[in-house]
Length: 92
Image (tube, rainbow, N blue to C red; front, side, top):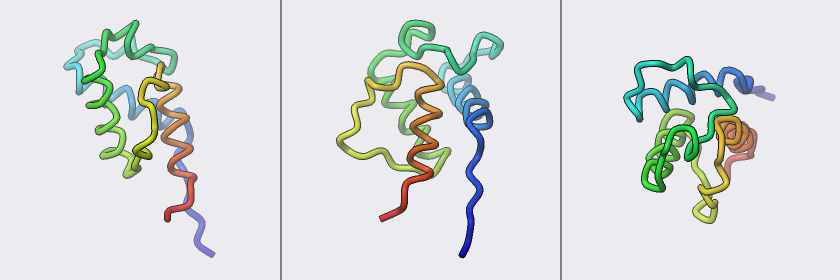
């Protein structure tokens, strides 16, 4: 039996901060943490959320179900939980 170790949530949040910093061309990452709200704190619009989701899929080698409502991702913590959930899910 092969066991794959999943990254811990803190590692995922750190990677998410890198992704957001790159997507938004932010110079100061000190304002970003797991409670950072995508829309309210970062003013990411709907198209920006789609770009963020594509970056999640690319960076973590995951695929969100086509029925997933991206509006459910409010914070970087929400995104990290989603990434962990999808990484833990058995591949079809």
